[in-house]
Length: 83
Length: 152
Image (cartoon, rainbow over all chains, first blue to last red; front, side, top):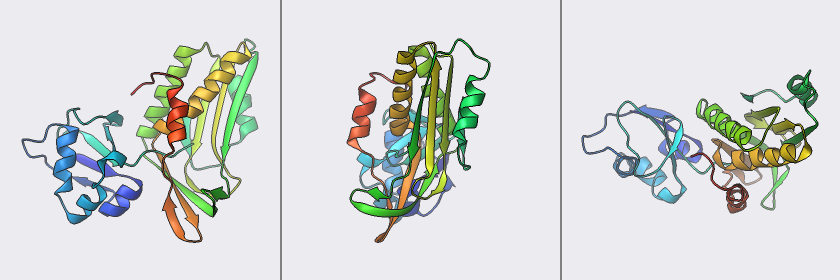
């Protein structure tokens, strides 16, 4: 899976993107986020408050119950502030 | 049409290209978002807008399509910039054209309200205390909510 991070999530995690291989029991956005929290101290800090983390799967907004797989591009970012 | 670019927006040229030769148009509404030098009571010297290339265009195209479903428009345009901005700089340009003013005005407001809460852009402000990421505003969510269900 290709993971992309934006704004302060990118700064706190310390990388723009990374490629991961999902364990077999990770099949939803919600379980992916929980798994990522345990990936490093930086991930844990950045993802401590999931109420300010938005997720897009293949460039569409996704919710906790939505499915994910190794073929997906998943982006994590804070609530948007454009316009 | 949707475009994401670093360069400044030539409003006159954009409007001319959008409406040229279409005489069914009876009204054109526009919105231009510009950078302020004050944010949450603090002066801001400059700002950088980061975005998610690919998703930005996809989300802007989705809402433009939604606007064209809700209103009978003759033309619509969203141009959003990214990069570093100084106070007064243009950030976003939205234009809609329709046979009558109501559809143009309403759809223009719809587009800017929606893109503020859905298009993946993030503002990093440069202040005297250093750089800070702008928080999303509840008032923007409320502005989007008044239009009812929008595409996910």
